[in-house]
Length: 282
Image 1 (cartoon, rainbow, N blue to C red):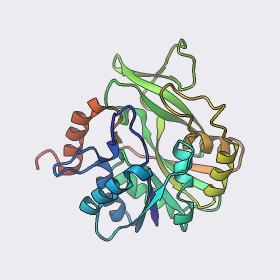
Image 2 (image 1 turned 60 degrees about the vertical axis):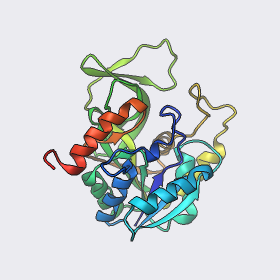
Image 3 (image 1 turned 90 degrees about the vertical axis):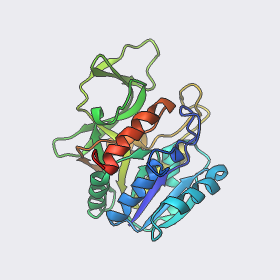
Image 4 (image 1 turned 30 degrees about the vertical axis):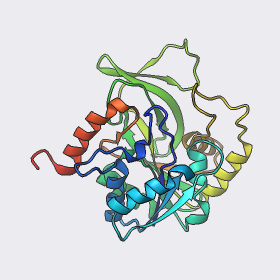
């Protein structure tokens, strides 16, 4: 069983290579803990999606921090920006159903184990997502992007709405990422199930991703200021679900997802990692 780790991000809001930001006692990055959790959950190999200019730095880091028995295969991300291209780039390196994680998020041992269990049950054109409560994914008052999941009574994904979310006045507010700047934000409870790109995919997803990339035109695609047009994985999967081409089970987890978006996140992330990985009395 393989895990695709998305490590090709530019870290524009962070201002550097946040995939390697030191958060652990011995200089570990978030993805180092995820690698250890993956081995414990039964993953035997990693496909590491990277940019060519940072590949050597990432591989050198992995050599110092990752479990020695974990097979790692680096793959250069294709030309289109976004997580759809990132996952599609792994096609030739993946041999069966597989998991997907972000390099700059720490999902927790329970969530990675749950993902492994979900992958073992996948069938043709049936996929899975491990979802978190919104309140367990927003660390500071800085704005973040979250894919808010609508779930059917049967526990399957109906749609994902990408929203800009902020924490304010003891609650949360959000609006669609492509909404006009003047549009007011609406209240969110914090209990909404959101995607943090913790996916389990049957191999058939590659055919669907390739079609979506073929149809994507960066020249006409809407995009946020300061970022290139990108094709986001949650949007593509949502479209596939809406068209009845795939089914996606939603597996909620009660744990916290610890991620890095802004430089100001680091002190809190280090504090949370200390509690999560070493315990309060260690």
